[in-house]
Image (cartoon, rainbow, N blue to C red; front, side, top):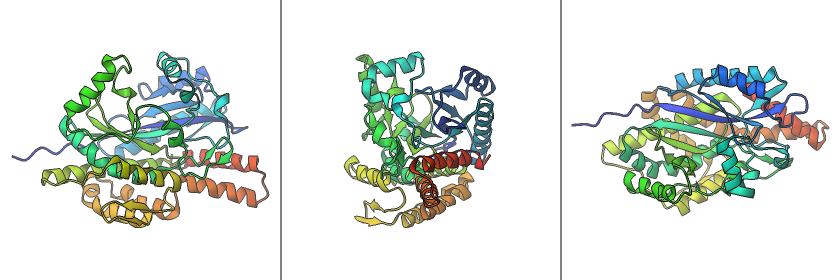
Length: 377
């Protein structure tokens, strides 16, 4: 008797930064704006750790088409209400020039506890991410797929990178966000788990000791959710453009289905040590799509566009079944033309070439990010 195919539903969570439309610097979200967003987007909007951050989350979506409608509504609503207060949201993982020392954390129990528990490490957490949930009801399957899916996390990261600047300087990295986030405990690649029971026992050990309240304080790049019947990918920078976010969600969904399909044939993706996957994670963080990743099976560095061509072919059947062929195919365009970090650098370079000074050129990058946020709405 064959096992029923999972629904592979998806949910997307995005964190945004708020900027002043005139100065283009980060700005605190006024209470009136937060109340209006919370009332309009009931259950789908919340404050984030810093007062200049907000978070939205889609409902459970059957597929990418439904997720597009959700994200368009959420992004456009936040943008409209923010504009009424002289602000604009940007979906970039780091602000190009604002200083973390000037920001204050949100006065809320959860964030007060984080501030106290993590001390100086959390104070510069001026970063935003994108989380994609894929529905897998069976707990044992969730663990098995997490062990295999983490091989592809560097590929997703490279496509998503949107944080080349930090405190007014080009860091040389495509994703600076992880350099900040990795200073927190319980981050990075997930360890290999042999069963759901092993995962639960590991979490319970820390809960029983009072170190964490639950698994939501485990911030791995990829984790099996204890609260929802999902696998949650947390590796990606937040995408300036909505359509890029949908491509990342479609790839996450299609890769999950591809690995499930292999499992139904008693096959699996080879599981590599975190040491080797972490090397690709670093290459994605440093170079984005401009340099290759290591093909761990072939033991060679392969140009990123070629890797994405192979990846799109690998999940072709799954993308078709899930109705997201167009979104998956768009990964090739990002691989060939550059990710959001590359685009920000180009905007900065053009501004400088046109005679703008350093600060003005960074302001041009923020203006570009505002435009990108509204581009697909």
